[in-house]
Length: 634
Image (cartoon, rainbow, N blue to C red):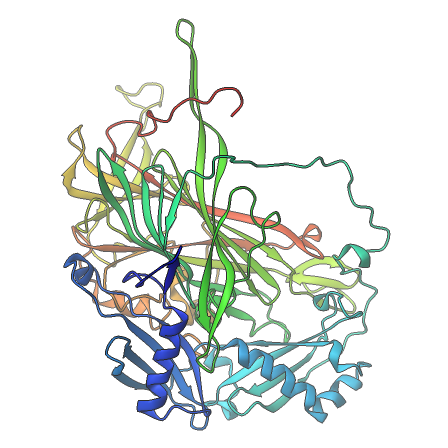
């Protein structure tokens, strides 16, 4: 329930599950399906109402989708629980599927290895006897890379790292050539892979000030204060957020983390829809190093782990500055017990320099400062941090920015440096790798009947009407089928994509639209036979466009852990459905092509990538003409 002052209100139909609802969903399954200590809960989340249900504006029964499995036989189930009806309304076995790995499993696998004498013996052979100083880092991996004699098990592949001091950086000390394969249901060691050993070099991989020799911190920064003495300009009532004509609802779940629902812009007294739902649906991180330490290292951070589960609490003055409103996130552990992530989502305003300006010799200077609303969350996935920011502007623009920071995976070597990475310390290289993010953009531009156009610039050839070669025209090509909706970025044509509602015209007579302005487009650069591409065909194109379907949420398939083949977009789009004048979803792939640098070591400054959604004919003129001027430096 949401507490507002002394009043307790029922959750909105799109609000995330409360702690009480999570307990009730798990309790119903324990009672009706004999779910006991043998079982783990992989995920418990709100079953979001469909667009049709929302449009009917009727009372909608709150339901929970639950994925769980029995550790004795490994069989996974997907259930739907009616929270108001206190009953299981769907129960489906999913043979062969492996649900996401849970934080509990990660911790328990480390403890099981710490107790195993075979592990202690393997580490002692490398001079490591203090197992409390060892970090066992469990990774999921694809079924095709699981040894044949382990097929059918729920397995983890474990990296080994070592701390030089209690609070030192374990990722500075890889135990190269040593890996453990673990049965995560039985928490038992299946196999020790001891391929080679490397003598430890004299690295300086520390970043905590007291551990960095000779570090003298800068003392020439004066305090920077951000004050809004009259409070922020936004209002947050429950999960509904309003700011500068923008209206939306803030959601959160275990897999995507932050979700933005029903994003609209108030124009001439009415709220016009822009997007039904904005989120991240997958993140694929392949390491481009074929050595034994790295060839299985491809993370599906959304599907295998869940950005929501990996979300960390934000801190005023460090992660966020200004007048901040925080939202907590309610998730759960693998026993089905709720847990709260305090300050999981940050909402605040930022100054953004000049919004518009002109200096006229008669009228003088007219200038407006820009302000933006920022909604953010941070996720720590083992060695990496991902900082996600959705920014809303007064002129109708939306920017999505992702910052990657944290600590690079490294390997020590002897002899010649492998060619698959950059030297970052003494006999230490950081492998090249890629971060592919998939944004799921369920657009409803002034309604659901939308068509996507590929928008390209073309320079016309020199001719009688273009003697100086200056003519530039814009080509707009409608994408009518899913096959046509598979698009790649074209720098030469400055390709972008417009989502247009042909049935709604602006004051100039043109259809209203919003444009996806691409950024950080990364080619996959993978052979078609690669296990990575077979599991994640989504990264083979910059953009995919599909008709909305409530069950089509995960671009690489619902169960990514230990998958062998992509069961998502690549399968859905085989039908080649119509995407013209219909309710469309855009799947935009962007990211970081990380050619590692010494400057990224031992902790990397943020690497920043982004894309934009910009109104294109959505308004008749600059919608920020009504922003008032500021004066007196305020």
